[in-house]
Length: 157
Image (cartoon, rainbow, N blue to C red):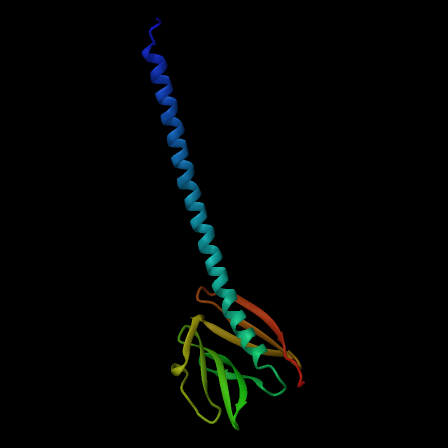
């Protein structure tokens, strides 16, 4: 019977340790990269969700004369009107105190912007009408990035 030398066993053990250390470093690096990508995707999604929320609200009440843009809160506001049992209600989307806010109230009420419900973080909302029936919305997010979208308003019918 042949005797094994200690050098062969030691070399196999060293190789196993190097493999294990490389595997752990690869896992740690991959986890770090994954976390950065996930954070970036989450931030981007939060920005897009705010604008998508506004456009969905506009489309849900979109009819001739039912959407109006005018100053409110810390910038421009979008006023969406709807009539229910003879009473006209307005939904106001605006930015106030660092947040995109939404408020539903009777159209005759004059409420302060602080009474709205928080939707998401935002620094500002600008609404322009570059052409009849076209609204250009620019939302400044919490980090100062500006997202914009154009929304065409339908006519009656």
